[in-house]
Length: 149
Figure 1 (cartoon, rainbow, N blue to C red):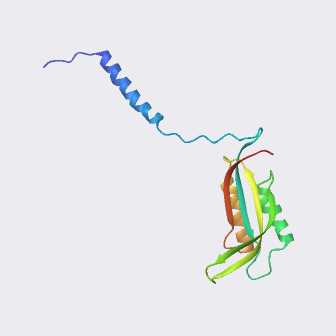
Figure 2: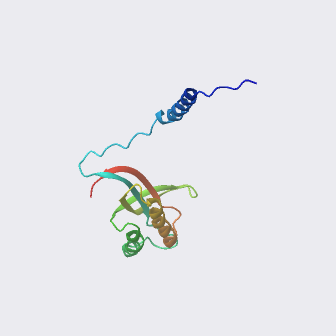
Figure 3: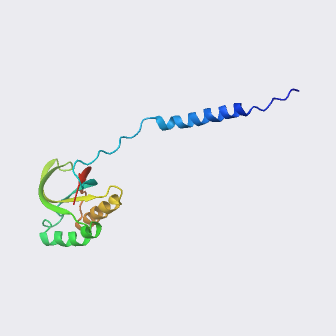
């Protein structure tokens, strides 16, 4: 039986080939980097707009005092750094009745660090409103933006 001779150069070549193949994966398509913010001092934020209908089943609409109490308890605890609330006038199609519904609303606008626990905080506010005021849904829109405060 003939023994193969040990060739260190052959092992080095095999090792270099393996390393080259492993590195090929790092040259594939990369995710685009987030664009830089256009103004000095701005940072990347996630913006959430949350839409709360004021029509409460089985009674009159949500009062300003009820909203103020809800905002103080449920929203401020989740967004202590600040938020903005505006009044809105919305409409939606009620599939069960086949009618277009017009409804006053409150619109909550918050900007938060995109790496924060924003999903949990928004969920807490929405769930509190749905439970307290017997709402079937609360609308939410999120987007990414540059901001400075």
